[in-house]
Image 1 (cartoon, rainbow, N blue to C red):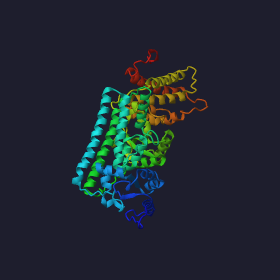
Image 2: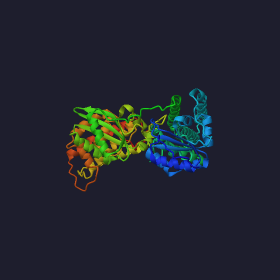
Image 3: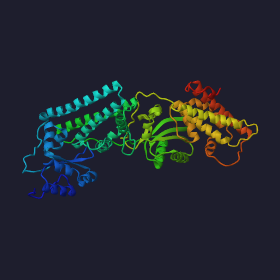
Image 4: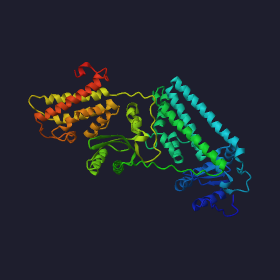
Length: 542
């Protein structure tokens, strides 16, 4: 088809796209072209109504389509004539709004197959209501099927049905934001694509990798288990999956309401773009702390979950959600903070990735739910970080407590063997002392909070003990009376050194008292409280 005159597209104000459109009009049966500059979204919309389905499919895969999307934030959508008429007859709100007369930038006068949407809201209202009701009706059918499977205890089928329901929701979101569905993509890819239209969707799915999500992995496991006649038992995740689905459902409702308002007004509703969370607290100490943290790691979020003041010193307990913030990085941050604060403040830093927290909720949820709260959030790099899929109901358990307690007890007994050596041979005792203290702290924190910390500095571990139960402070006088700086001494002896021991009887007695008292505390906490009811009698401290 030949164009009778040189076309211009002043609304586009983009020479690159104009040249492409002129070429398309000359080579294909283009019926209409609509362009809408969307001020309330990332993308503007360029809709090209074309006669043949084969042309629409071929052109949609053109390299320039992706280039225009990435470079100019213009979403190009080719729709063939039969499909266009079908959506028009159904009252599809995307077509109804984005194909208004005001959006037309090209009209082929030679083709009569070119409807222009001119109906008023009163005439369109029934169409819109019918479109909306179809969504609600089919959604309710999907949801009732899931509820029936939950009541029957069919774990695998529940998750596969939830996967179908979430795909159903995504289809509607794709239709309402892009005008078409992306069924050829897998669930992870579809979620990632929708983030570009709805950044908020990131809040509802925890990532298990760079481009994969925890819930989609769960759906895949359920599907594989069903095929192999196996069963998965993660009933605690029902509510978490339900919450994610409910959030998608609400996004659909929100988008339908938005399109309804815009169609009624026949103009764009300019929405205020959400501001990024500033996140920086007014406390100047915390401002400095966050600035220091961000100099070392790319933290997603920082939570202040405790602040304790003893005498003139205040200790801030901070949790980072971050990738790659291991013990070495945390140690460097702590040293930098101490240097910049002249030792006036202490900071207890723990850090985990979002995916690690999600995967370990079965025993750590009690600890993290007390921290990950809006009131504790002091920094966030984005307002769209995903919310965790909490287990409901959650029954906390002390998994592997036997091994953690036994290790602590054996370290204490080994210490006593050498400390009570009548020949006064204390070689290696300082290492056993440090090992016991580390084992005690981690086990104590685990019992009190269901959280097993990483191998942090001895002082950080002790401060986490104080957070777990302030009653442990009754033993601080022992650390203060120690013949040298207690915590640096422990940290130094976490590594083995080939040298003669310089311990004498007086120093060993001090260490012995600390080990005895802390081991008694742990024994009462674990054995006397019967947390290990099956602990062998010959393994007890009696």
